[in-house]
Image (cartoon, rainbow, N blue to C red; front, side, top):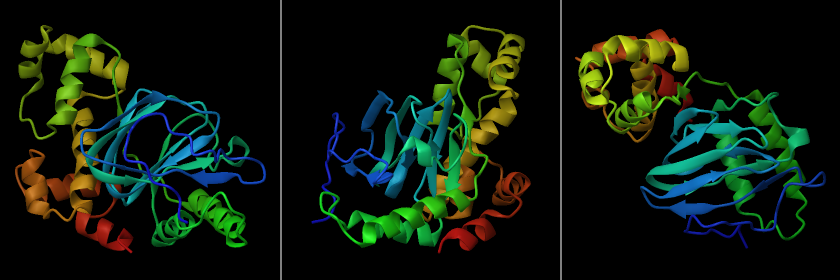
Length: 265
């Protein structure tokens, strides 16, 4: 019988923690939009991956938008939470700490290759309570493929200062907002100069650059869902599709069409 799937966000441990003998295991949740997995941690690492749908992962004072073409590596003992943005089939992989594919305590955005997607799908069909000759082979291949995965700069850092928290949360919820820093300052009860200093001090970048990161993170999810580029550009506040494509190419080295065509499998 394939891995059991739950449809809730309550604490769920399917009794298949990773071990030296089985260094990678899987759990499964099918969740509706707006559901939320609260902050938690565990001694193993996690590859957060959704076969369908889009989620937002928050960890290490950063946020990531994760469509099916992407996954997030979360190192062991890192507190993380997940918000469902679109009805999703969440299939996190749990990786024993000794087999972590990346060093350090930083999360990584991974490209999910067609091979990795199919390997995860094959693992999902196994009953993890029963020994299978294929299981160690699939696990070895998944760990090898994850370690070879390209990483992408899709991180959106999050602030600690309460004056920035509300502003940043509002922009993440509505990335296409045309409000300027001066207009946000009026809402936040602080001067634009103060907010500009806080962006540089807490987030390591200016307001415009941070907003661009948010918009590009959302763009990946919208394009993965098949939304036309012109509509993506309009929804995210760009003056034109060409302006959006130019910004995307500056960040990723190729146009959105070429980038996703090459990775769609």
